[in-house]
Length: 297
Image 1 (spheres, rainbow, N blue to C red):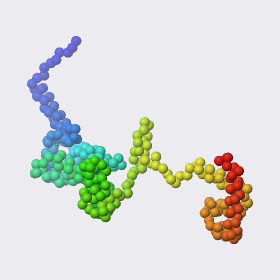
Image 2 (image 1 turned 90 degrees about the horizontal axis):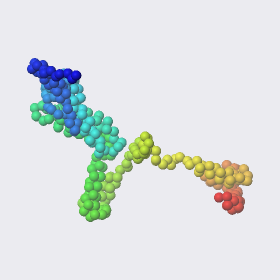
Image 3 (image 1 turned 120 degrees about the horizontal axis):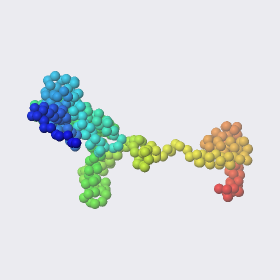
């Protein structure tokens, strides 16, 4: 049989209401969709309201209170870093942005003035963004002046293309920037620095668990093709087959070691004219031999 519900006494309801109020105060640190905290007087630790914590921190400069404030507003650092990371290249690590933003948060906590009546979330967001921008500028190997000139040229180019409906010429860009040809060439040269690309950057996604990276598809010009190497050795054996030792050395030293006739003569203790005569004789014999075996190729 279902149990009968009993009505709580007024004293019991009053105690339960106080406990619920304390639980609500303890959980007052809610975060909205932007990652910023709601409520100006929610508690953090030990039941101390944020307003009292700020006053106590500014009075004593306690490291413990400072750490508690950092933990409270850490969500703003994460939210700001993730939003800025969406507009940056893939090789920029979001953890590096969060690390730089954390320093901005600590500076904001130290410099925050309670008497101004400004909400700390609004104040620290700008300091965090500024710290992240400073870190990005420090990571950028291209000088800021070059970036500024590049942006200036690109803005003029895009404006002309939108107005004319076609690709802008260099003369039209010069007129828009109000510079001569020499100055425009200098601007163009400065706006095209050598780019740096991470070889670990993702090239394209695949159905497998392993992504294809730049280093997996780049062509290595120093690597020799095994088939080409085997063909080269076979051709060398075919050419030198049937030649005497001196004739074989002349072919190898001249075509493979790239030595001159004079150097070959000194190596074989022959005159330069004799080496040249033997070389011409070898070519004539090889030509006749290749003509007979042309069908094999």
